[in-house]
Image (tube, rainbow, N blue to C red; front, side):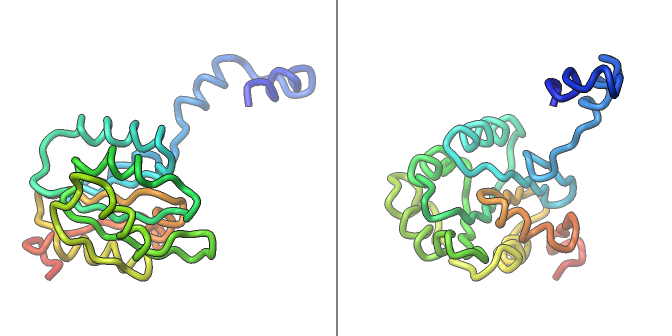
Length: 176
């Protein structure tokens, strides 16, 4: 982007300060997007080992949550084993989801991949047919002090954001 501004400088003069101001205002929905509430919602399109490592570090820095519920969907060609191994210790309950594309791994396949990762069998996961369904199940199971993480493919996060940014309300807050 900066190279484009430099190339167009004679036609479209943009000051360095204007570029700084513009970059300071950039928001990336779905990139470690924290939606405050009870429970806390974290949205991240992390879908490769490097992004998952950054996500795990960010989650770890958020502090204590009694339970972390994770909604996860990914493409079938992704090397999910190392990703699940990295984030697995931070997740207590899994909600694997199918995605609306032929390239995606099925929720059942993701469940099998999760079961193949050593040390991740802390609770029984439940495969879901769509990100919205998986998210609704996580909200229904979550307590006010918990955290819900929606991550993986853009289809996963996008499926939860279809109707706008959700504001989950835990059971005691009138959601049940």
